[in-house]
Length: 145
Image 1 (spheres, rainbow, N blue to C red):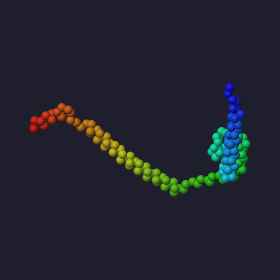
Image 2: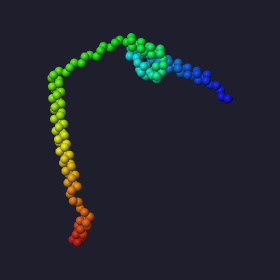
Image 3: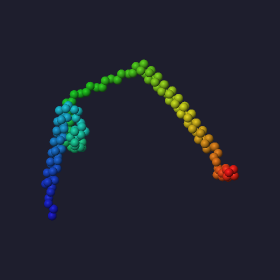
């Protein structure tokens, strides 16, 4: 019969849980001391624990939520100012210039492509030496020697 090791397993689980809890509490204290914004993901990363574990700890969640309530509110983002008419005019000029450049490049590339197609077509149409022509030429060369 096997020995009952459940007491040892329970003890190891309790110790592991206590170490995890201590890491989380220490990380939370450190984050609060540095006045950093505390989130579940940030605390999990700092403590080296799983986010899902933090969600099972209601007191830690309460401290995280409380730190959000105590945190100073950030001012709303500044209002965006509209671009001036001169700025819009300059953007429009630059866009027209770029369109003209791209149109010229497209025309040049189409011309190059047409030339390449023409060269390929002429290379296919040009008659090459057939085997019978090559034999005739070699027999003519033998007769001249």
